[in-house]
Length: 158
Image 1 (cartoon, rainbow, N blue to C red):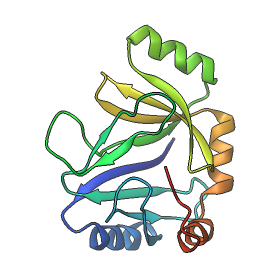
Image 2 (cartoon, rainbow, N blue to C red):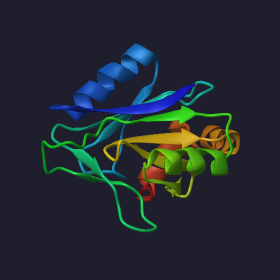
Image 3 (tube, rainbow, N blue to C red):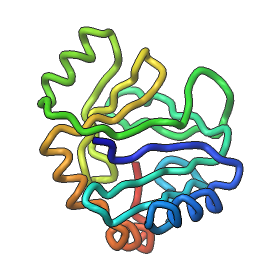
Image 4 (cartoon, rainbow, N blue to C red):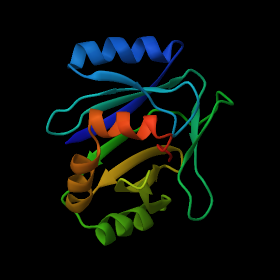
């Protein structure tokens, strides 16, 4: 099951508005990762979301106990494209697979709202994995109204 994904665009707000129209959602600012980002967000059962970052944004691993962050700096092996994928496995099982593959992985609580396992496939491409408990947190916390309230309060942060 796919929860969200991200793309980069030259006109993030416009692209998010068109995507929101296509998927029956709402386009909203998405400041946690980088300035100028937007999100097309649905109030469907999965809280389907497509994050749209300014072209050239890359996601980079953060050291220690910190979330990945957006860097408007370039065109290299990193990319803003990522997805959040549900898994039936538990946290320890996901982390064990990451260790086996030699891929960095850690648990993160996104914006204080829901947990993910931040997994860096081939030490380059970020994917977020959500265990069953994390999937429920995601569904409970991510809605158009909750996001609008967070943006209005100046609180959404990675």
